[in-house]
Image (cartoon, rainbow, N blue to C red; front, side):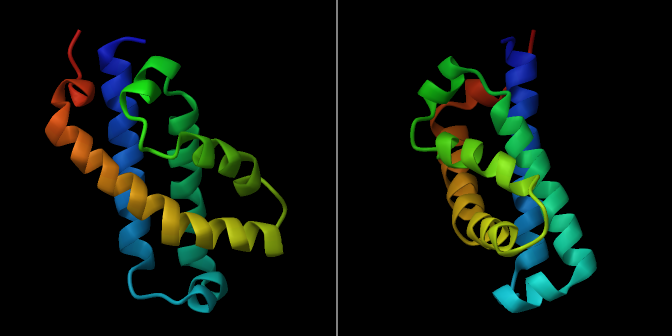
Length: 121
């Protein structure tokens, strides 16, 4: 994968994660799940994030082993599932665990391996 595509995917992952963090800040689980508009946008951003993670190749994943790649891979089909308890649980888990950890590790890697985030040919 070219560094342009790789850098763009990491940028999408980060932007979607930040959007989710902003949308759910201060919300309790019940508040998120009851809010039609916020919930829909959070789900859209999580799907963008998970779909982007799914396109990151094995070598790039190996360069950032602390990111929960398999966790995001497991969430992709859950985000596409029918409304119900399983989707609710996936949404909340992603918002409370996966997104904050992903954003934390992306910041660490941006500082320690900035070349991974550059979009150059």
